[in-house]
Amino acid sequence: MEAELPGAFRTGGTERGKNFDMKKRLLVLFVFLEINFLSFAQEARIFKEDFIIEKQSFYPSEYELFRPVIFGMEENRNNFFIYDYSQLNLYLLEEGASQTFKVQTLGDGKGSGPREFRNPSDICIVNQKVIISDADLARISIWDAASHQLIRSFKTKKFVPYRIACYDDKIIAYNSSGSKEGNFLVYNLDGVLIKGITDNTLSKDGFIDSGYIVADSTFIYFGSEGKSELKKYNYLTGNLVQVSNTIVGKIENKSRISISKNEDEITTKRASDFKYQTRGIGLFENWLIVFHSGRKDAHGSTLDFYNKVTLEYLFSEKIDHTFSSIDIKADKLLINSYDFERKEREFFVYKIKND
Image 1 (tube, rainbow, N blue to C red):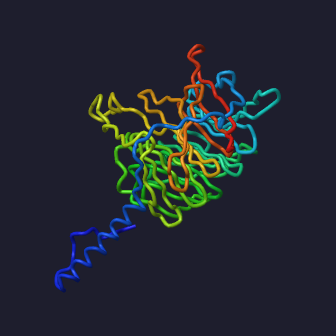
Image 2: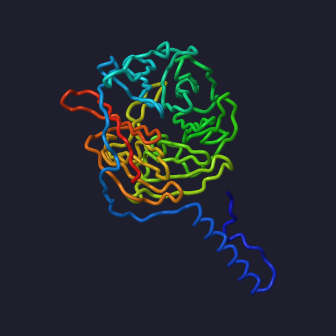
Image 3: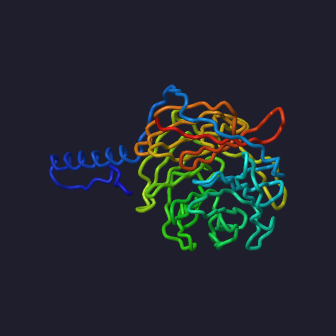
């Protein structure tokens, strides 16, 4: 959406006409800001209990998965797809008897071939399809959740698909740096680019506006990792429609800093006082559920609930376990926690209640 800012007023006409024209333009500007840039003042969290009920837990290491960084779950079955950075491959933990799992291997390990991976960055599961993005290969691959076979893969060309979200037959890829097509690229399941959405307010510094996305039939919801900010885009029209601060108020981390340099490469990291904001995002009925960290180690234990229509904060719930990432599918919540006594990852499955 574009709006003409006041200051470029026409010359000529009566003084009364000029004043009326200015009032109209200021009204247009006010409406534009009111619709597109909603901001809620910092408030104290309202904590509630028993909206999230623990159902199950397991250790991925029991299935030889020691660095389960990227993961997702099916909506109707207790099956979990995990990319493990120790094995450098994609696996399915298929539910068996007595809350145990059968391990299925989907990929062929590290490499650039059709069934191989270099640096997977995100995963989403929809309609029995497992969709995984590979940042190094600038590629999105689609797998059949039932047969475990690769259906197809496609290149995103000069766009690095850092984050992805899925809804029905749409795949949305996100990168704050973007490309000439935009920061959000909407594809169909054949890999055909349908629409690009550009947001010029996003930081080109990937450490600041890296974040997490989720989608429904009309909107993309974005939570920034470096800023306490939520955004909502209409991916049918290509418009940014809402921006809101999270419940913690306005916070923006500093940019990245360089830590080493040689002839070919500059290595960077986040500033030492960088505190992660959104570390996961999901939808359940009319709620937008946001995992807020607020810590330097990217962990946390608080889930904030917002109205997905207005982005208005509703309430929060604190989980008994500290975790670093989440996945939400229908009324199921999966968290990636860490057992400090055993010094390994532990996954917990919860049921989300709406009453």
